[in-house]
Every structure is written in C-alpha cells, then in structure tokens.
Length: 282
Ligand code: FES
Image (cartoon, rainbow, N blue to C red; front, side):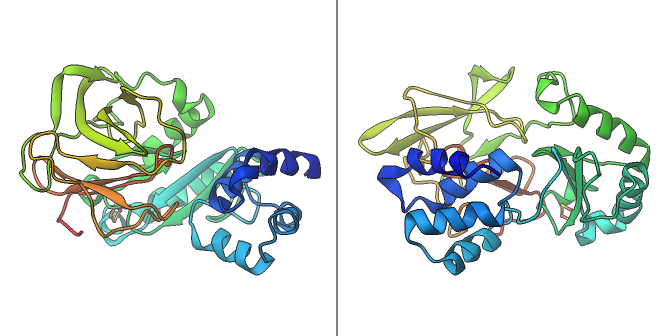
C-alpha cells in the first residue's frame, strides 16, 4: 500500500471530509480491501478516530478488512437455498478452487464466501459472482460459472444471457406498471420513474434486468447522490423504511409482477438491490 495513493483519494474528497463511506469505497476499489495502514492515514487526515472508522468499515458488508480475490463468489445458504442443495454447491466451489469458504485462492483470483438469504429465494439456489446473480444453480454449473468469472462477466452480452433475468415492476402506491416498452435499456423494456435531486427533476430509465445497473437519464447524476424516486402515474414517492445494507441510503421499493418486491438503493452508483419474490417485507 502506498500512502501517496491514499492521499490522492483523500484529496478527491477534500471538500467533503465527512464522506467517509465514499473514501472507504475508493480505497476498497483500489486494494480490494481496507488495509489497516490506509485506515490510519484516513484517521490522521480526516481527524476521525480509528475506532469510528473501523466501526463503519465493519458495519457495511461491502467492506472487507482482509485481502479479497479479484472475483468474489457468494453462495447463499439461506433456508430456501439450503434445502435445494446450496451446501453441495458451496462444497463444489471449495473443491474446484482448493479453498474453504471464507478463503482466497493463492493467486488472489477468487474469494469464496457463504451468505444468508439474498432475497431471491424462489429462484434458489442463488450464487452471486461480482454482483451478477446466478439462479437455480446446480453443482454441474460451478465449473462454467468460474470460467465465466475469469472471462469477465462484464463482457458477457447481457441481452442474451438468461442468467440475468428481467423483472416487470409496478408502483407500490397505485400498482400502475412502471414498464416503458418504448425505451429499451439492455435490449429490454425499461423501468421509467421520475427522480429529483438537488434542484433537478426529470425522468430516469432503469434496466429491468435484475443484476444490471444500466440507467439512462435526462441529467448527469453525480455518483453518490441520493435520489428521490416518484411514480410517473400517481406521483407518489417510492420510498421504504429499509436502509441499504451497503451504504445506509434509503431503499426504493417496487412491486414485482407475479408477486414480491424488488428494492434498489437510492444512492446513484451504489449497486445494492434486494429481490424478495416470496412476500412483501417493507
Ligand atoms: S435463501 Fe437463498 S435467496 Fe433466500
């Protein structure tokens, strides 16, 4: 870890030294974890106590205090996935990678972890690789998942990739569909909402592919901005009492056609989202 690299990150947030989460996100992005020495520099430069900083770093699941591999594989061990074979899937990953769950391969290519329910139980067993959801995974698919991760999932054509599945959503207040078949994002009908932030107010189109983060909007939205979402039909604000587990911003709920709820983080740039196809829980 080079102290000068950490100072470059801190300089970026000179005006906003309160933006600790953004600073930690940048450090994590650079090193794949939060090195202790980097956190000491953050403490010295921002005046925040190291205890405080560790408090934030350990609260959010997105941060790691130990080195992670280039690719993070999370196998859901919640009850629904467990009864459908998640333990065997985790064992197969362990066998093929030659590590135990919680470990990182010696070439720092993969980190394997098991996690609790990811909120997509109806589609289990669920495995998440670098933020991409794989549904109905079986042990025979493990080898291919690892190969795809190495070949960079980002380069896979998500228009053709059935592992990233589309959802149709409607407003939690008026139940009117939010789908816009006239504007495609990722090759599928988009989800159209009205957003406001700072003094701006206008439309935003979200990809309806669960696992894709593509959006299109009439303004440039600065990363980290918390946005207010509204239904374009009844104008009600789409808000829930749930906070994002990754960054603490409010989550934005939408009803999934066929039953259930999807929630996305209201902070632009945060990739957190939850899908609960079994019930409404906000
Ligand atoms: S138990 Fe795996 S997603 Fe819910």
